[in-house]
Image 1 (cartoon, rainbow, N blue to C red):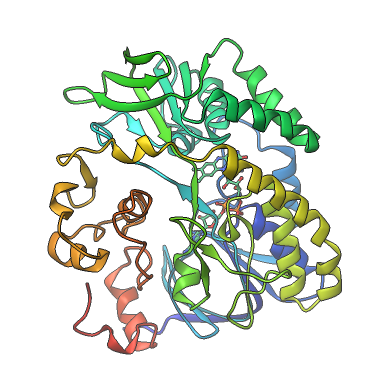
Image 2: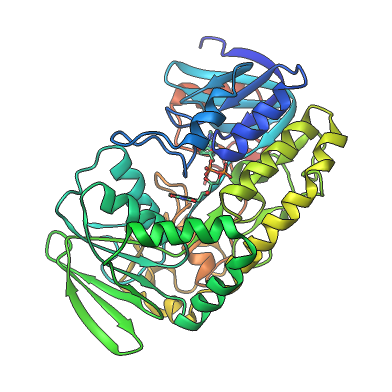
Length: 435
Ligand SMILES: Cc1cc2nc3c(=O)[nH]c(=O)nc-3n(C[C@H](O)[C@H](O)[C@H](O)COP(=O)(O)OP(=O)(O)OC[C@H]3O[C@@H](n4cnc5c(N)ncnc54)[C@H](O)[C@@H]3O)c2cc1C
């Protein structure tokens, strides 16, 4: 086995989305040796994901241009962690990265809720389809329905339309009165109100329905139609593609592995931080969606705070706190007005697949008291996504709370696992207990 390359950074930032970009840039202004790593080939995270057909937004271009003194490590996935050290898988093999301070900016993923037909080809997450299309997935001329909850539906629909999709409609599960109340309170965040109006303008002519959700998707080999339930009853609509997502959940797996305390306000934990975004583990900060779903502006301001704090510039970090407070108020507003309708929890039937990696139905999970027992008996959560989709859905459905993180965080090469074992990245009790 060859020795993994090892490097040391004063400040190492995980995640090159808006939060991580801001953190790296802030830390570098203090002369620190800064590394910024991301699993993706290009920096930008979710909202600034590279679009093969459209120009990079100005704010993203500026954030990327400001990385002069930062070493950007693309295609670096953190798979395991030990004290002041991360094990990273790259296209060229495993690397060990050591740090003085760490900023976690691992963002969020979509919440997908199972319903009959949700695994048919042609059904994806809303942000998931947006990401595919930005990477060149052909959508032009296809009849697309966008459904689920939250402002991401508008952003996804606008991207799909810009790439030539025929967006038939947007189905928002929140009621019309909840969305109206949200829009009214948005006046306190004028930039957000302008952004929302801009998105609506880009979607002129696309109907936006409220209090409506997808009950089922139908098709033989691929999606042919969907069944939606709304205030006027149930109807069936033909379409080629369904993009459906129920908001976002923080990616806390790496933070959990590092021993950072998590906060459990609802079914999905976020990382517990103090006002300067220190986690419960000394030397580790967290920023962005990881600290609770807050959107782009919160991610950027928190990234700056965490980057300055990680470089020891606490006074500069503290001066930014009022901006954070304001953005976090917006996040609370989002959570309140787009709360999920409990009927969404009852859509999956006993035969509905819950774990699509391992083909496990809802009925197969009956009788298990916790996620670990269910995993051991059914392999639920042991596939490529490592429980990120099914484990999160089961927590939302109130079946099992999310279980703790274990290395490797992502499927990794055997050579990387060998390094993990040799370099003590695996817990002592791991041998003979790899479930
Ligand atoms: C699919 C999707 C689409 C979205 N689209 C929009 C949109 O169009 N408009 C909008 O306003 N908001 C969008 N959002 C919301 C978005 O989360 C925020 O607006 C913003 O991107 C959050 O910034 P962040 O830096 O906290 O996280 P992110 O932008 O999510 O960045 C986190 C980064 O961490 C990396 N990462 C995570 N774990 C690891 C690891 N173990 N190893 C290496 N790298 C890792 C990821 O690859 C990612 O690049 C979207 C969210 C999702 C999930």
